[in-house]
Image (cartoon, rainbow, N blue to C red; front, side, top):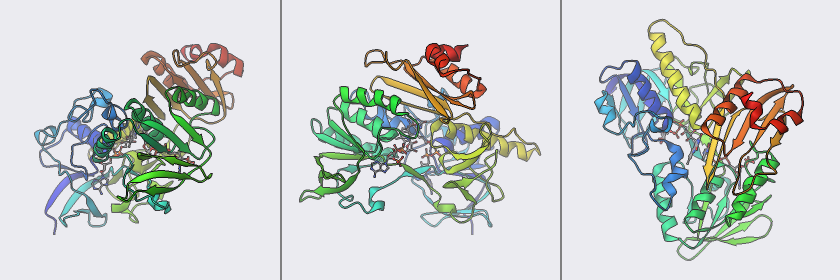
Length: 433
Ligand code: FAD
Ligand code: NDP
């Protein structure tokens, strides 16, 4: 027996959930129509802050400062915003079961709710080294970062180990952003990752060499081409040493692991079609089940621009997919449809004084420009990716807001280019022309 019926239920109070709530309000919502269930204890917030300003030693970001939708220049939806807009926001409430036949969801406490339309916005979770059975991976002092409660634990560990040493496992987004945050907190960092250079899924070796050099200049030691194979603990169960696969061992007062994320499918596993690790959706974010939508990290959607299906684990897509899904839901209620989602991939990162943006697709031949002149003091350089004679991807370190807009334009319009040399000599000028 359902406790209550909602016209709309959102599972997951992260970025996508928060932006979806805003779009419902924008398009017209009656009190009591929407419930947003979140496993976290706080209202939706801009998750990117957790690996950046939240960890700063001075003037760190704290809630309520970065609730959604401030990250895209929107209104700050404090916990009071939800009831003020007639939205129920059960926090610390995990949905453990959903039934798409009977259109119900059930909380961990065993309470069942009926929905008219369901939006799955459960995001992703970190990959845990315990899953690989890495010996000693259960030691205290090994940290992961996805949610704010994990960031709080990390903040305390950083304070306690000030002046000590850390090993950062992984050379992706978390690895690079956390290595920088730990360094500015006066912790000596060694990064370890298996690939020949950092961020290999996006960077070329030439791009990576700049960031690795910059990090080394800040005192970070980088060990590549090997893995954290085991952890040793002291008599209290706290990590002391990281054993690498190549036989080396590193002392560690704390360890931060960022070896990837996996989408959270659990409450709907087996009931929705899956593709590339996520729930398969159409250009309106509708899943294979009637009246069930999936948005954000958990959705594998048609990427119209490239004619394939992708899952994107970045904040810009989580916001835009939420808006698209809610617009589609509201349009369908009026017997209308919306244009298919037409997404231009956008990724970015910030660490130390650095800030890069990337738009488009990193396929084909890469052409790096301005790299020779880039240094710690003057770090502007970029890259284009060229496929079939057209520019399909653009990267820029140290760009201004206007220049970054040009990157987006070039990646979307895919202009033809006659030679590599043209891109190298024009640099950002190619995008502005
Ligand atoms: P999430 O924001 O993860 O939200 C999912 C929510 O669902 C969580 O609150 C979770 O607790 C909840 N949930 C899950 N299962 C259940 C359940 N069964 N019941 C109830 N609630 C549930 N991207 C960028 O582009 N730039 C960045 O700088 C950047 N920085 C990041 C920094 C960190 C530390 C992390 C972890 C990610 C970062 N990302 C960044 C990625 C970006 O934050 C994600 O792509 C985005 O948050 C995805 O939004 P989402 O709503 O799909 O998932
Ligand atoms: P990433 O996938 O970015 O990076 C993980 C890296 O760790 C990969 O290079 C991976 O290599 C490597 N790796 C895998 N296994 C091991 C291992 N055993 N030891 C050492 N390295 C290993 O994931 P993150 O963990 O950095 O980020 C988690 C999530 O958070 C992602 O969804 C990411 O998009 C998001 N995030 C995004 C940010 C941004 O956009 N600025 C900032 C912070 C987080 P391989 O590729 O070979 O598997």
